[in-house]
Image (cartoon, rainbow, N blue to C red; front, side, top):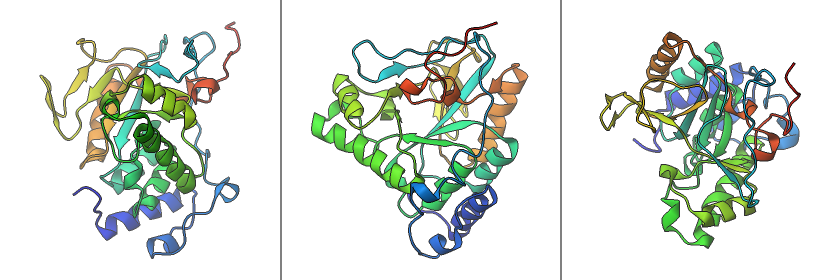
Amino acid sequence: MRGKTPVITMVAAGVLGAAAGGWPVAAAVAGGSEPPMRAQLASVIGHQTWATPKPGSWTVPQPAKDGLPAVIKNIETKERVVFLTIDDGYTYDSEFVDLVRKEKVPIMTFLTSTYIKGQGQYFWAMRNAGSVMENHTVSHPNMATLGPEEQKRQICEASDQIAKSYGRRPEILRPPFGSFNETTRQMAKECGIKSILLWSAEFYNGTSGPGVGFNGFARGDGGKGFKPGDIVLMHYRKGLAGQLKMILSWIEQAGFRPAAVENYLPRSLGGNAPDKPPAHG
């Protein structure tokens, strides 16, 4: 199943991208030229905006003292918000793109760049729906087991391909399996990465998690339910639209709402927030 997409699904995803205000997809789906570069992307990048946090409602993550990309597992906030992040990219669900776009759900995609080939229009649709595309390496290896040169290749080449395809170079890395070491941080910095974003909870969408079963939810700290500032890990898997509806209902029932993690990260860490936000009050 990985890397294979029914033609109808790919076409539908491309159409959704166009409906979201984007690049004319017909030529690309038919095997035409690559998407235009940055100068021609202004009309389709960043058109979707998300609510920003109220001044004084959250603690702005700080750069690491050693000058390497900071490692972030959650956002300290008083707001009842959670952040939905989705990894990999080998399953292409056009219904999911439509749901994200229509319901205006802020998510962040950590894209394994090998899945771009042949499926670029799907992620164009995701980009147009408002998802930032960040770095999840070229081929999803366990980074901590690799030497410096291969770690750098995995990060830099993924960023190169994402920038070429979607007009923005990633500034945030999620290492596969959450596995990294100091070499990863060093190589990430050389590739233009400003922070490493991990997670505080996981929705085992489309699979079973330890102790929580199929489509289960588990916190990294062993607790229950959501906490303000949770970063939730999901994956691009079959049935993702239905799985998104499921977790959105849980979030709403718990009195939370999804928010855009990039609006809670300062620019020095790859986000949109000022490094020194206005004082409260």
